[in-house]
Amino acid sequence: MLQRELARHGTTGANLVDSAKMRQAEQWLTEGRLSITDIGKNLGYKNPSAFTRTCRRWFGSSPCRLKHDLDVR
Image (cartoon, rainbow, N blue to C red; front, top):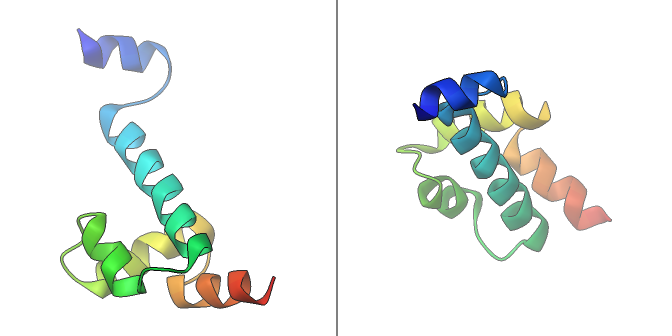
């Protein structure tokens, strides 16, 4: 029933989880208090490379580059 309702709105449970992780990653990268490794672990990634690949998909850039660019602002 939930899957049908989500599909009616053009999304899936996996998409909702992915979006929530993306927003949380962006917040933690912006705050700059956690290391990139810790952010990845907190979001459930087993290794840093998996988190890096996902960041490239989400933001078009590596988490290291994003954190650096946010620090410059």
